[in-house]
Image 1 (tube, rainbow, N blue to C red):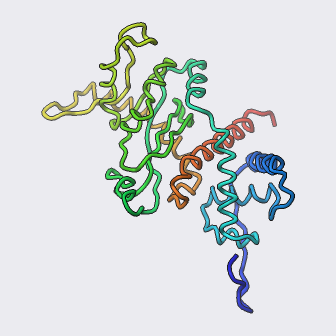
Image 2 (image 1 turned 135 degrees about the vertical axis):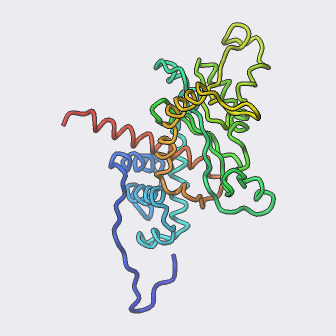
Image 3 (image 1 turned 90 degrees about the horizontal axis):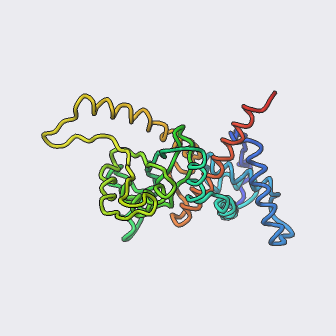
Length: 296
């Protein structure tokens, strides 16, 4: 902890509202309680509910760790250790891509929206500096791909990749198209994925198609030199953009956790953090839907 204040300059405290449901707090507290039971931990500085409250406050409001730790009588390093412990527990509950796609196919879905976003980070040093600089956004960060349904609900997010990685390169590296095709789903992306469909020309004897691969990739029309878009193509692009705008709602729900405004954790924890936030986002949405449908 920091040094005690001088006489007459005692710290002040204030209350803030944490816009998280009580069910989410109980979920996190239950995970912490189970881990302590497995470790046979006999004593901790805070109760499982107290630790869960501090971690959720850090993820939601992104305060300085020393500030929130001082209000609870612990050091910044203790708060950081609590956060890393909880996000590891939550990330272990994240659904894997194959399971998500299998469930979407069982529901009768035909297309999945795919898009990428940049999670801002601090400037790196050494060789990692250039790799994490995004020329598109003119910022340092990490690239993350996400899959959503037609309503914009997040289904899955990828591992964090260096900021200079293009969206289509990340999709090819993660083999998203092939995994979607195996479950009969069609990817729908923006102009950043233009040319993704050309990968299919090299596919032969597809086991899912029973011969030549027939999968398509939905992308908007793109004007070329001396070949402007026709009126029909412009109308098709407008309809396609109206369908794909739902994916922005998925990223907005994820970035409500302000810890993603500018990541200050070590980037090696970024993937674990993102998967933990996805679990929390799903739980909050499920709790909200259950409250709306349950009789009053």
